Image (cartoon, rainbow, N blue to C red; front, side, top):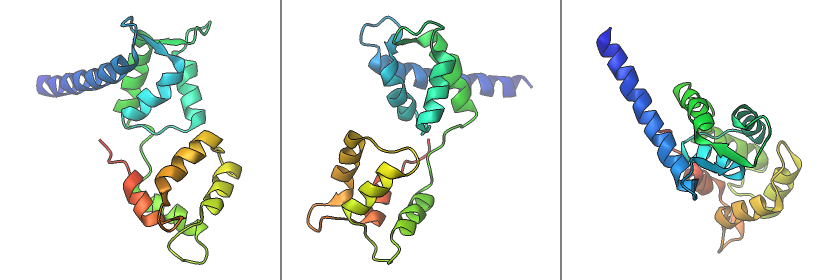
Length: 162
């Protein structure tokens, strides 16, 4: 029994260290607060991939009742500890990402035109902003062929689960 508790405490201690390290990168004033706009980046750096709606829910949980534009570490730590312990917001596996691109490639060419992807990503689900779309295309489009060789792109963007 005591050994199991020690293992659990060590695991929580390790999670707390990861969260603290990620938070501290954005705590520019060294006052245990970060700009609320950085929270998504911090959460994603911890291997979580929440949707914008899920991120909004997390923010609602950790923001002060009167939002200040900043998030306090003492509110962030317990919420993120729970998220990591429950293994929430896991990245989508590579094979599932590949299947999504294959659905868009109805002619089974093995690539997509940038316009096709732009149209889909700006009209379906959670639409990408212009900036997000440009960032994605800069990484996804093969500069020589001006197409998205999606098998290569999926391999490049797949996140290894920690």
